[in-house]
Length: 495
Ligand code: UN1
Image 1 (cartoon, rainbow, N blue to C red):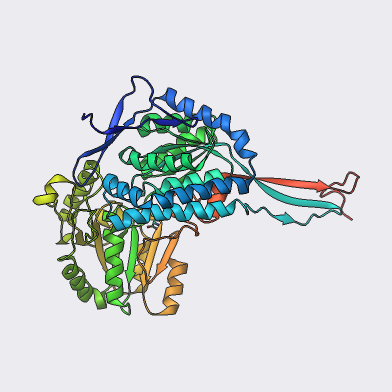
Image 2: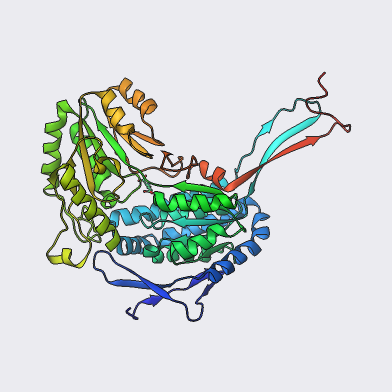
């Protein structure tokens, strides 16, 4: 392991700490395989300290007026705005998404933190009439306590911020466990909150493996809620472990998101959308367009347009603003995607791509060609989440078949239809089994002020972002105020 990279510690109780003798790991730039920075592999004892710090900080943070908590968040949004260019570059260097998307990741963080800062002056409850006289009924929101946020590498600043900002505005204290391969992005995020004046212990960072750090967090009785974004297998494990402790577990898992292209679609518009949806972030979004379901009347024309356009699609240095697609995020990702490509070659027809790119800059990083397969619905590549730049194209004869194919997968995060027929567009909103439906736009690009999440194996029924984020991180307290000065009995005093 090289020793020339900067070494970062854990953030516990408002201090950066380097536990003596700690094991360390490095993150690397997937475009060059150069090491970027070094981090602590936290132990269960470190996790214990971080949860202890969060528990200690909880009462004071809970009793801080929500608008004051909002002011701290607004300061964090401002600090991150000042650092947008630098952090965007770190996102691109550590995760590999092209620089426009790296900056977009940071902007999505800023947008959400600002949005949640405003929630500090809302956090609405309800007032509800009583069945009795001189009795007042209302609900108030209270924080859950110490919450664990376990976050993935594909949106290495945005997803941690979706969770942190919503948890903090609601009055919880947080222990963040980010994906190991984007630990520098997470460290940058935490530094922004530190600079904004978040009190010690309110936000803590523990880096290290899911099996050690994640497990210790999920199993600790002081953790009242776990918010997890990642793969289905890890999510199921978190859910089961959390269930034993009767914790609220919020899961955001996979997707196999379809774009349906009808015979009346605006094809040039759809072409741009499908390319962005399928190959943006090298296909490594939960919302990525991984299936293209095309009406037979426009099938040949559109496939020709797609393959022609891809022949001059630029893959390369993600820091170059002209690059269309960067590397995939890691050696593990590359291996898994190449395995799926081999499966695809056996069960489907490869239209374009299907290889690791070699020569020049490609030899230094994890670069794959944007890949398109023509396949029958039901093949593994048409149903399993690949999380890479691999698009499965499926031919259908009519709208009903398109919807049947779209819905016949285990996931239901995002979905899209391109059509000029307004009736059909509204039918699709009703018919598509997904948490998100786009009309005449690809499956990616959700905005922070709306709920985000999905149905079926995409999650367990919750939503992030929008005001739904507040639901995720608060308990509702129901309050009855009887000002009649006598005992009134609900359901019994009936006149
Ligand atoms: C994800 O891939 O987990 O809608 C999040 C989008 C982004 C967020 C994606 N705003 O594509």
